[in-house]
Length: 219
Image (cartoon, rainbow, N blue to C red; front, side, top):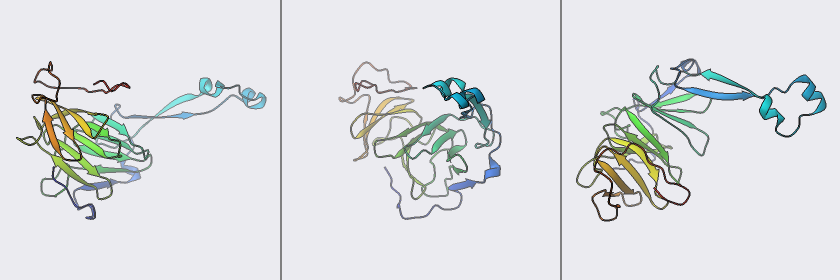
């Protein structure tokens, strides 16, 4: 896995801030809900009973233009409260007021390795992992705005098309690709494939579209 210096600032073309006017209305696929807690006048005078405000709340949906009218392909809210949205044209972070766009630019070191984002995952250390449709796996350094990428190859992933991600409960990440299941040891950068001995037998060497580790640690 290649690494980028954390102290280097983002370069032009890597990160694009989007002003408040830039997000007004996107495709109907991006719906960010907010609840208006509005108890009736009678309830306000008497005092609402426990849980009554939940029944009287009115859901309100607001459309936000964040992705140039391209429908999102993946969404995640990290431990800091930022909402991350992947699309066919890149990655966007949104704090509720402003958005920032990360784009793929082959001429800029540390940029997103591919524009089409399929999967997002935050690990136990708070690191953001991005599965792309043609550039393999990427890890974002939130301080510098740069990505370290892991491509397909003899020492890399089974395929550059990453469709799903899941924590393995230890120091690793399950990676679902177009050519089967991989397991990445994040500390060493070593990849174990579905054909290796530590990957359980029985899975076909085909596309893994979704992954989930349950409360008992079963994948």
